[in-house]
Amino acid sequence: MTKIISKDIHCALCGAPHAQRLIASTSTFGNPDLDGRPAGMARSTLSHWVQECPNCGYCAAELSKAHPSARALVQSDSYRALCSDRSAPALATRFLRAALVREAAGDLSGAGHARLHAAWAADDAGAEQLASQWRSDAADALLASPGSTREAGDWRGWQAACVVDILRRAGRAVQARQHAERILDGGASPLVTQVLRFQLAALASGDMLRHTVDQALGRPEPAPGRRTLGDPLLEYLQQNHGQLLTQAERKAMWMDTVQTQEGPRWLTDDPAVLSLLTEGKAGLGRAIEQRLRAELAGELVINRCPKCGALARTSKARQCRQCPHTWRDSPV
Ligand SMILES: [Zn+2]
Ligand SMILES: [Zn+2]
Image 1 (cartoon, rainbow, N blue to C red):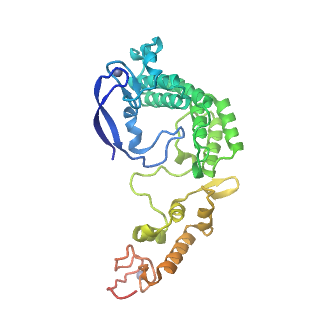
Image 2: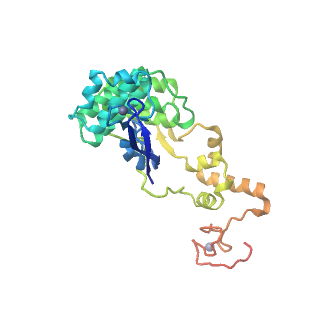
């Protein structure tokens, strides 16, 4: 659930006190859009990502903090114009002012993200042309900012891949394609490679619509609720012995495959996970059971039907799911 709390703060520029509403916690169930916009409840918390001082018009993620450059900036004509701009969605103009604040402080990446957030606010308001313009501005700032984060593992290349999507949705297909090819040449993770191939196909067909990571990976949009593991032994191990699983085993359990030109492949290049999955999800379950049996000796109880050998639903169940057999607490 999203939890919003109220906090009394003072504007770093004019000192005016405000009660600001802040996100204490939220959930991002599911994978993001291809431009990084989160799924789940976090998606609808956008209005809490930027604060505005009603007294002086200063906008920032945290009003109680300000870079020394901010004081002169909020007096500037371009900033004042945004304060009184009624032609754009109000939330978007807050993000645009926050972008100017970041720019003045020399933070191009922060400015780029603030402009992208303005585009999301425009998306939500149905202001397509503004959204496209601000995406284009966001892409310019992000392309000019020094390659930001150290990304590792399965999302290696993701930040750059988001810029491909921002360019595509801004109608800048040529640059989007060039950028995608650069990232592929530089070596992205299998997951991000798949996302970029989807981008190249979308660009080839002139598609400028919103898409999600799940669509790019060819998997169904997750239904709200619990995702299932698809293998009965893995389900059992997760439910009854989840605390005994290693990080690699957990990761392998949830790993998906994608179809590529070279055939299906796992969406990771983590060697520990790949070696667990050499015999697929069923083999993974067997390997985990074997490891737990070796380490726990007689303590591990995998509850199987004494008659047909099918897995019971839980460690306490005394009724078979496959055959009509029920049993008492006899040793199994
Ligand atoms: Zn203020
Ligand atoms: Zn049975």
